[in-house]
Image 1 (cartoon, one colour):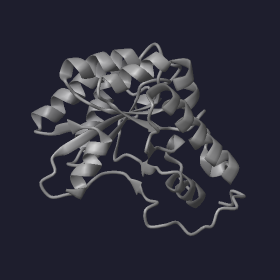
Image 2 (cartoon, helix red, strand yellow; image 1 turned 180 degrees about the vertical axis):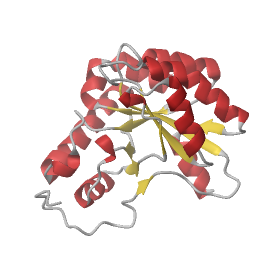
Image 3 (tube, helix red, strand yellow; image 1 turned 180 degrees about the horizontal axis):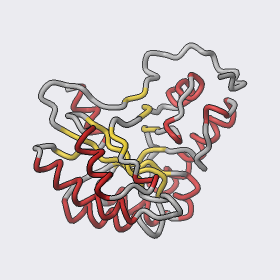
Length: 221
């Protein structure tokens, strides 16, 4: 696809997307939540994670972070990791270089304003990645993160179907995609209901639930 970007098509070796971590003996899984924060579902998800003593990773949309700074602070204060998920969730494959850079840096700036730290993780909206997206995200200091287990919660899947997706797709080193805002017709009750069951299943199978930075770090040790 011709995106009209002026960025060199060569992508450095560092500019890769991590979808999972494959390492012998690594029995860890990272839960991730996209599109937040909001004032409806994010707090309910945080309540569950706190009760279950689980840390997760939240990929935040910049304009939502700006609207709900206290929720961003709660996410960080409770020990979860934060990543950049663009300013307003466009398909960056269809954007030019200036737009891609603006979407990333403006979100970095907002998250830093709220938390004091710039995020070092970036997840492209829709998981849509091109060479320019890879290059710009990498050049601005981000590791690109994908996923290996898609719960399809955003599509209104039932709790039974969400759990089935996790059981079928989870492996050691998996990154699980869920959402903390949005959803089909703005409804993520399925996510909230499924989450305790997902956590219970993974713990039963002997998985340690970690943040994405912890998962990546384990791969390097």
